Length: 238
Image 1 (cartoon, helix red, strand yellow):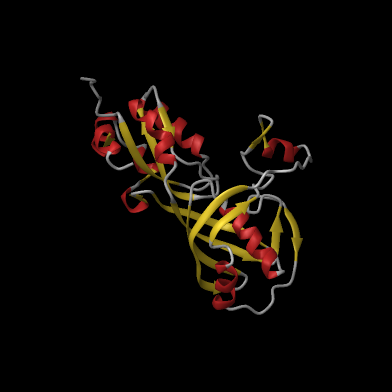
Image 2 (cartoon, helix red, strand yellow):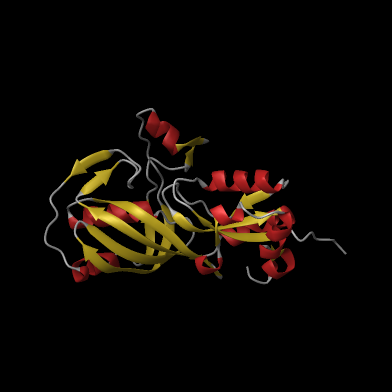
């Protein structure tokens, strides 16, 4: 029978803004002197919320855990477009924002429900011929990006304080919420970009059960072990 360590499993981290998912993985690996650490689903540096880390022998489950559906809460700013489709990018254009209501936004949001062919933004980690798009974008290059099929289960706006609008979306893995914000702005005719994004759930895991990274980094290895979801239990939660 294969033996498992108390550190073979998953750790639910509440990622802070301005950190990449890779930054979190590297920090946790180095802090706890772990050999193998991975993550299940990249969050942009601006985004916060649930990041599932897999430790030790659980790294073999990363692809299956990554395939789970996701839920996000976000904010978009109407009237401005950026090259990355979010607030980390360069301002491209400003346009006047027409009088709008939450109902107006939800009528547009409903048009995106179901299967959706989504084009990745140029400023993204998506690779073309082995080169990340963001590296090409930094060189001033723009290439044709193949759309990919995603699915939106729900997409609703719940508040509006012009020029900001607040929404919640549940979707399949690989959905670019930045692209969704951009496309909503184009459909409205005024442009928009994402200013905040928080992942609240991934599959059966919820951010309410995650620990902020700053707290995780105050633990020792024994404390870490008490928070790891064991590999055998993890298999039943896929």
